[in-house]
Length: 122
Length: 281
Image (cartoon, rainbow over all chains, first blue to last red; front, side, top):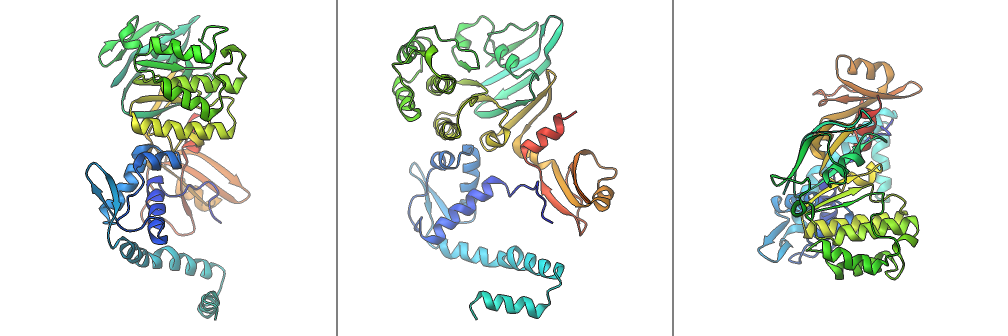
């Protein structure tokens, strides 16, 4: 049973993920300017320090870079960087929780695999 | 800027509303002042803004005592429940007045905010509805240009739309003009993302003063079958618990055991939940 009182991840991580999603979908194209921390803070009603922490994470990962006096920009190759990172996390973030739940429900490996195939439309 | 409250006590008829409080608040920072009804939040704010004189102790802004010091007091804007604007004065005249008191008051910004909040600037301030009276005080605070903002229950009586707009404007304003903001509220869930530090007071005393990250990092919840949750909690500092039939959630201080036992679920505590557990008794 999920904990009804649990909180989600830290806000700066959620912000970093949302910005990454926007890069993945093409809403923020490579080499375009990222919203400023002021814009992010206002849009999500979060403390500007939290917004900065989220953006700094993207810089650390090479997804964004800082252009002095202008702002933050989406790096060239940012999309493939994010895709690569998420592929690496896919097993832990999605496959492991799924197999754990399947075991809890007494679903066999075969049953689980056939459901995955169904998800692919087979 | 640094606001320092040094061993301040305020007594009313022998009862301590604020009891030996010492705090050092450094800006820029948005600090949440949290406490239950009657904990002393408003009295503490009034002491800082000079509306109330301490029975003991002193308050300093950048090393200067604020008491009867106009130069220090004009750097502090305080908004609270009580209306201090002269009766019969129109909103636009209130703005003119504020411009005389606060050297960095931004009239254009006050007019822009009034439009956004749909505040009628030709209306007399004491004829405004509860919600609009609060909005006027918010507009005044945001456009005051003061280095220290004391916001005592700034969203009291505001509908969800106005609260949301206020949070947006506050974040934009703060990002562009970083300063020291002390923000008291009972709507902790709404304020949790806005503040970076929390001061929790109880019965006139400081119970806790931490950054939000530290505060949330030193408490967690464990849920699962009651027996297993209790066994895990044994010997640990328990903040509180919730039960639902055979399911139990225990709130604990500290950091989770590693490796974390199977069959139990680990969770983070929200600021509001933490506040409730810390101030329940």
